[in-house]
Length: 94
Image (tube, rainbow, N blue to C red; front, side, top):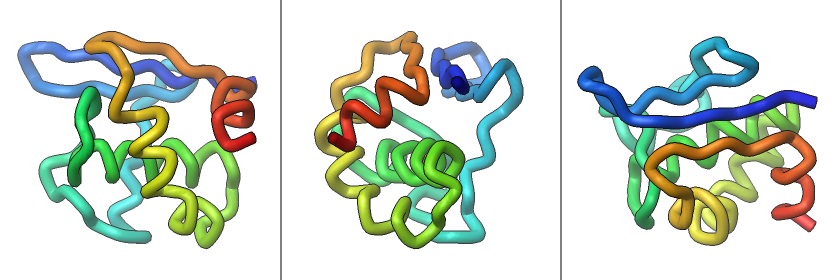
């Protein structure tokens, strides 16, 4: 199962999947050209929600459809440094 991790550095917000940079999936939709954010509701968290779901689900249309809910229920409440497993994403999507 994949492991997604996020944290902040001097370079800004950094998000990885299995220790590799997570693709922001601007090709699907650009909510935030500045990239990822979390801990609140907005465009940066929306971009992260889309990227997480697209990577995890491997279904771009389903990821787009679930982005708003996942951003509100999961991404907006993540801590400054966080870790999510694929299993936790599945549970959140219930």
